[in-house]
Amino acid sequence: QVQLVETGGGLVQAGGSLRLSCVVSGRLLAAYTMGWFRQAPGKERELLASIRWSDDVVYYTNIMKGRSAISRDNAKNTVYLQMDNLKPEDTAVYYCAASSFVGYHRIERDFNYWGQGTQVTVSS
Image 1 (tube, rainbow, N blue to C red):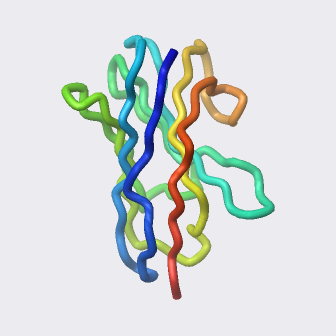
Image 2 (cartoon, rainbow, N blue to C red):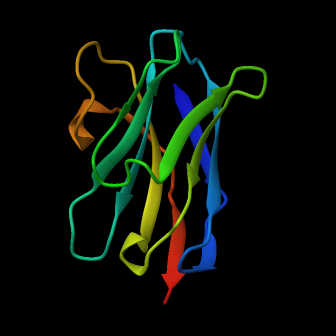
């Protein structure tokens, strides 16, 4: 079992930055893939970026590409999402997720562990 706890959300002005953290506990295997998703009211949960725990291979969708960076710290068992040049349309609940599945990790059902989410609000 894997537990994920996100922190780092909050209120920020447009153009500002935030760094989200996801502390991972439990039986996380090297083969796992970690991902950051977001969900705005009335919209589907969408993948922003993923990173493979074993070799740091990263994948970005086009949603925040160029404005975000995913990384991990093995010693702290933590995954980060740095977000820059934030816009009001980035307002959403941001979720950390982990997947024990092999293969592509592009949508919500490709991940089987989830954090509780952290709210990000960007004011104009």
